[in-house]
Amino acid sequence: MANPSSPTSPASPTSPTNHRFQAFETMAGPINREQTIEERYGIPENFLEVEVKNPQTHGFGRKMYTDYEILCRTNIPAFKLKHSSARRRYSDFEWFRDVLERESTRVNIPPLPGKVFTNRFSDEVIEQRREGLERFLQIVAGHPLLQTGSKVLAAFIQDPNFSRDNYHY
Image (cartoon, rainbow, N blue to C red; front, side, top):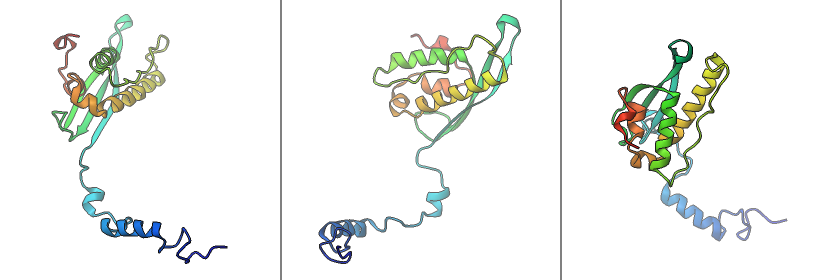
């Protein structure tokens, strides 16, 4: 059985391998140091929070639709506003996804939650769709290539007066 304190033992603090790591650890400082108050509770260097919430159903009969509130909080420069709120319909998300696919061939755009043809205004269906739309937006809004390369990303998420008519795709 090897002696753990033997210089030839791999677990030995004085073995050549551990000596290199000890030197690096000493240069970089202790690896397991306590976080400062600023690191723990301060504003992160870059943050992005996107929520889809507060679904509201409008209209009657065949003209009924549900829209969703998009809340965004960020300090990422690609977004003009630090805090924003905008409402979008599912059909707006479909258009937005199609535009993202055309704008960026290098990014795999995730799918939207599927179309629903029965009970589409039930609370359960609306909540499942809301969750799916939120996941979709968190993925695309958090992608660095889309943040810098998309002409519609920030406006779609943040501009309450957003109109597809302003974008010719």
